[in-house]
Amino acid sequence: MVHTRTASTETSPREPAGEVLPTRPRRLSEVSRFDREADVVVVGLGGAGASAAIEARRAGASVLVLERGSEGGGSTAQSGGILYFGGGTPIQRACGFDDSVEEMFKYLLAASGPNPDEAKVRAYADGSLEHFAWFVEQGVEFKPTFYAKKTTEPPTDDCLLYSGNEDCWPFNLVARPAPRGHKPKTTGSAGGLIMKRLISSATSLGAEVIEDARAQTLIVDDGGRVVGVVARVLGEPLLVRARRGVILTAGGFIMNPRMIAQHAPKLLDVNIQIGNPGDDGAGILMGVGAGGGTICMGEGFVSMPFYPPSKLVNGIIVNEQGQRFVNEDAYHGRTGDFILRQSGGRAYLVVDNASYGRPISGMQLKAADETIAELEASLGLPSGSLTHTVDFYNEHAKAGVDPLFHKKRDYLAPLVEPPFAAIDLSIDKAVVPGFTMGGLDTLPTGEVLTPDGVVVPGLYAAGRTTAGLPRSAGGYSSGMSIGCATFFGRLAGKTAAQAG
Image (cartoon, rainbow, N blue to C red; front, side, top):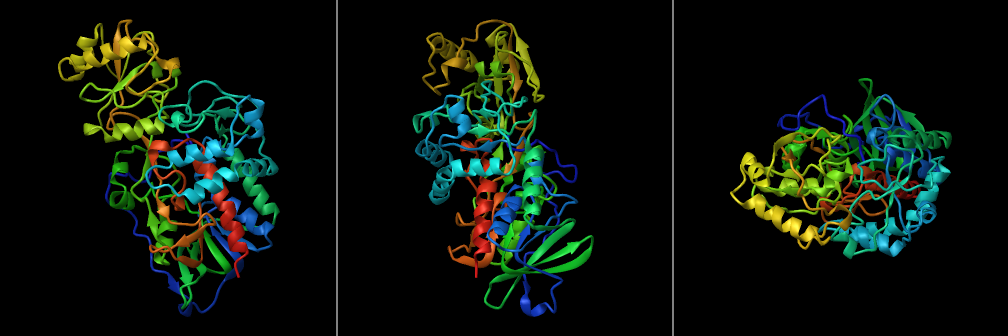
C-alpha cells in the first residue's frame, strides 16, 4: 500500500463531531504587520511540500515552510514508500520489462475513473522518466530487481513490483501490462527514507522550516490575491507574507470526522485511517475560504488487504448472494471498493485446503466445513447459491479460464480439496484501511481553481490537499499518492516561484 495503515487514536470516523476549522480568510487590510516574509510559503512538509520547496528554491525564490508537526515527513514518512514510475525506467529495463510513455498514459487514464484529468495524466506520464531521475538526484537509490510475489508492500529491499491492476482485467486489455511500482532500496517500508532525502535537499538549498507551526487561514488582498498565511507557533500567532504565492500541501481529511460525514460518508466504514493526525482537511478548508473549488470530495480509497500469502488469491470472493463480483487477483484497493458496493458490505473469501493460508493482515476465519454445501449453510447464503458458483468456477478453472472475471491463469485452480473455509471480508468485520482522494481543484501547475474554473491568484496546492491521480479507488495503484504528490508538488513550486 501507499501508506502505512496507521490507526487514529484521537477520534473515530464514525463520530459526527470534529474540530471546527476556520475557513474565512483574513483581509490584508486587517493585518497591521507581518512577522515573517518569503517569496513562497509552503504549508506542510510532507512529500508534496518538500518537493515544492526544492523546486521553488531552485527557481531562485526564498522559501518558508510551515510544518504543523515537531518534524517534517507527513503521511509520506509513515508510508511504505512505493513510487509510481513508468515509460521505461532504468529499473524496468534492467528487469526485462518493456514499457513506454504511451502505455503508461493509457493505463493511468483508464485507472483515473469516470472523471479523469487528462492534462494531469498526460503531464505525469510524459514526465515520469525525468521524475525518476530527479529522485535519484536527491540521493534515493533503487535496486534493479523485481519482486514477483503478489503483495501489498515488498518486505525486502527489492524495487520493482506490480503495484496495482496493470496485469489484471480489464486494465490489461487497455494497456500493455508493466510493473511500475518502485520502492527505494531498503528493507521494509521506505517512506521515512524518502522524506529524509527530500527534507535534506530542501534545507540544504536554503528552504527555511518552522516546526510546530499550525497554519490557520490565508490572507488575501482587496483583489482576492492570496498574500500570506496566519499561523500559530506553540500557541503564539505568526503572520507570514508570501510575496509570490502560498502552496497548500497539508494532506487530506481522513482524520476529520465532520468532513468525512459531510463529503465522503462511505469512508465511515474505514476502521484504520491511512494518514497522520494532520490530515484533518485544514489545507482544503483554507483553500475553499480563499475561493478555491473542490472536486471528487466523495471519493476515497478503501482497501481489503486479504493477501499475502498470495495463494489466497486462488480462492473466490462472494457476496451474501453467494455470487462472485470481482476478479480476485485485482489490486486490494479495487477489491475493497467492490466489496463496499455489495449489499450490506458483506463478502467472504472461499478457499479449499490447498489455497488456504493465514492472512498476515489479521482477517478472521468465518467458517470451515467438509463440503461446499455445508459451508454455504454455515454462512447463511441462499440454498444452492454457493454450490452453483463453485461448480461453475471449478468447471472452467480446470481448463485455465475464468469467463466471468478473467482472473489470471496463475491463480486459477479448482476448489476441490476439503476442508473448505470462508474468510470474512465484510466491511464491518475485516481490516479496512482507507484515505480520502478528493480535494482542491488545480491545474497541473498547482494553481488552485475556483468552482467556475478561474485561477485563484497567489494560491497553489499539491498532494492529498488536491484531487490527484486517480480520482476513484477502483483504479488506484500503490505509489500514485507519493509519485503524484512529489511530481505536482515540484510543478507547484516552480510555478509559484516564477509568479510576478
